[in-house]
Length: 177
Image 1 (tube, rainbow, N blue to C red):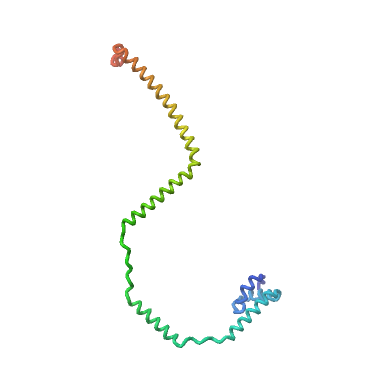
Image 2: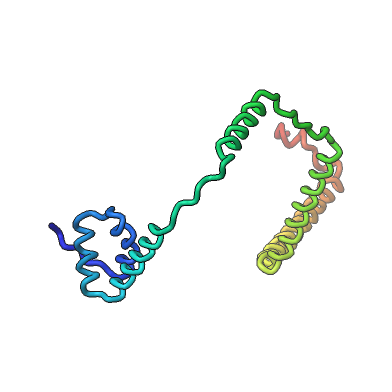
């Protein structure tokens, strides 16, 4: 048989089980060994035994005389209630105005959350926004200069080609004559 060691907290939890005779033989042996060495737990067992003896001294109270009749009447009332049809519940009328109002409130709440959320994130995104704006402005500035130079070159070419109107003919150049 295996020897089990137990603590006071475990023994106190199992004292009622011991008094009821519900412990396994190894549990009972371990508890009895502990009780032999621990006066606190032994005193707790004596207290529980005395409570049990006091409860045994009490005489049971007789049931009321009309207990059977009241139980049977309750059973009969229950069976009568089962034969009745259940009351129908009225549904609230369908109100689309309420539905639209609820949807409008939900949409307003969502917009408010997103609007406030954007302002809460602005310190984080402002630095990225500034860098992006600088990059876009630089691109526009450099491409603007390039476009203006290209436009100047095209206008000079056009003015040179069309100022000597008779000297240049695209058809003659294509044929090589």
